[in-house]
Image (cartoon, rainbow over all chains, first blue to last red):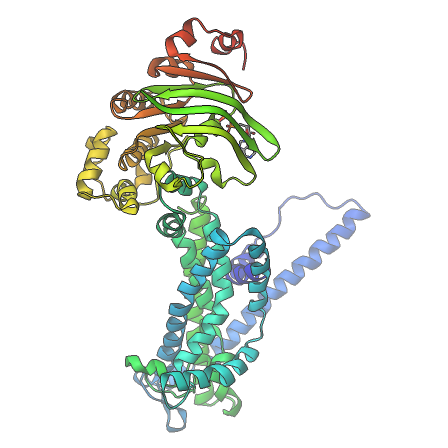
Length: 326
Length: 248
Ligand SMILES: Nc1ncnc2c1ncn2[C@@H]1O[C@H](COP(=O)(O)OP(=O)(O)OP(=O)(O)O)[C@@H](O)[C@H]1O
Ligand SMILES: [Mg+2]
């Protein structure tokens, strides 16, 4: 349950926080005494905690805006969305960073989607009962591995492997990052996709089986397509985790801010938005243009992640609204 | 001509005996109705005929079920092949969340049937008296059809793989009277080519459409005979009580 709740909470945290804003039932009679008084205390302290959480979130958000928005005034849009990121020469082209993030993320999805769906199908439809009982907690453990550990693993095992097998100058490439991110997104994708597969009505399977479809045909032609909106949600949630991930990516992608435009740049170093912020934040002068530009990247990242979450949340909402997957 | 022959069939859900010692013969190109109170084992019996009970944990079958003389529970029986020959229509219409065309084409596609797909789809839809209503919207989502249309779509989907027997488990219980009548008429025309076994709670329906009727009571086949006889001169007291509404 852990991983699933974690991932879903994280997507719906915003909406539940908004829901927390709605005041309690009006016209409640005043608490008599004794036990009700205690309850009143508990209730109000919970409310205070809830509101302060919202307050902190808003604070952080405003801080981000205050520090980041000036960049959009200080630097011309042509520069800001240009192709060269050399802050020392006043070149603040974020495009290679945005594309770098997108590149790594999309590649990681391309790896994680088939693996995740296949694993979810295996756990739900094929694995015997006891295997399922063992696999599910294992996958949740997988979600808990600190990303720095994965990064270390990536640097010392994965990167050399990529270098030798692909015969490229360095193993610190977009591909290496994508593999690691896929690994990180997998637990989320598996749990959510598995849920989606589980909600496919029995009657669809019955119909297919009764027509003489084999177990596999039933799975691939009926169950998985019927669960596709849930699977899309799973991917979106996994992607949400991947695009915001910093540590592991920074450790294995080589961090060269070049435009990854050709196909073989998959096996060359790239630099992502998060890695840029993390790497450069320590060296910038407070309040400088460079400093603002890093927060500007933060804003862009925030907007992208927010959009992805919204899409994922609407998909979840639609699914509930319809009363199950269709 | 005999299609199915069931001999001393027992069925267990774990420790629970759901069917005991059922023996009947189901005729080819006839409609056989199964009636009886809720929970008496009609669906269980029906699902024994195409082995849809196989996936239920702890389920156990004893006795023999012969389809054209071959025991379908014999070792080495190809269940997929069996279900190709014995199709099933369920209580609630269950079209796939795909287009009307894809729903019908599903069976022929997965079974790799020869022939022009468009022609199979048209024939099946005509066979299920649905063609005129949907011929202009084959690409539309099947779930947009009315329940009665969906059920006829499910019948069309079943006959698209050209089975020999069609099992129907209360196919009209989710439908309004007009849609029910349409399905009943459809059954009369299907009976030219297929053996049909239908479970129903509707006495009128059983007497209207069927040639033979079996009455289940507490997991046993209490009475099985020509429909007319069952409804006019039942051999068992309990059958009469049930049909006239005094028991059940
Ligand atoms: N999967 C199952 N596991 C255990 N017991 C079951 C299962 N399915 C059915 N039963 C039991 O077997 C008995 C026969 O059920 P069955 O569904 O065949 O009845 P039915 O005659 O079709 O009833 P209805 O008219 O309500 O559809 C019932 O007592 C039911 O509780
Ligand atoms: Mg039933």
